[in-house]
Image 1 (cartoon, rainbow, N blue to C red):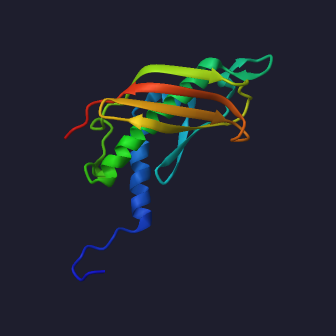
Image 2: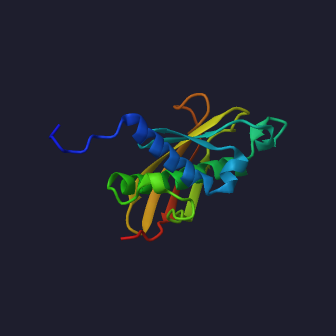
Image 3: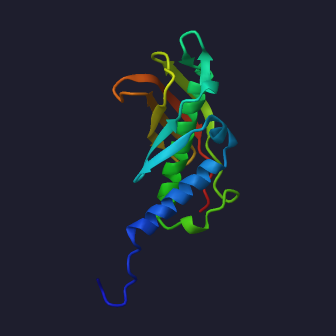
Length: 171
């Protein structure tokens, strides 16, 4: 380390700041709280978690997750995943100070242009997980693919592809 150079921040401080930034992003969407969706962050990768709750069942005869809940879960994972990737870039480039994030000052969330969902099998009455991958992200448009599973990541119960209008970013 060069004498006089600032010391790097401890990893735990950086981790806490990134977690706080993610929580600020998620807190701005009340529907996420209603469904009970949480996000597990490992580095820049997010996994959306939908904990099982009886209110999420659409067909009590099977029982199976409601199709609308499944769609909302995947679309939420895509929007938050895309927003997080944009926020991450800005934080790492020093354009946003994560210590001063305010839900009212965050960039607007991307708007859905279209969202195509494939129901591969019934969602069982248990926790579900989803991970979004940003295929392309430009200044105004982004394409995101999302996969959802329950017990086995290799056995998807739904997948989706969405196209989003990315809000204009501050210069």
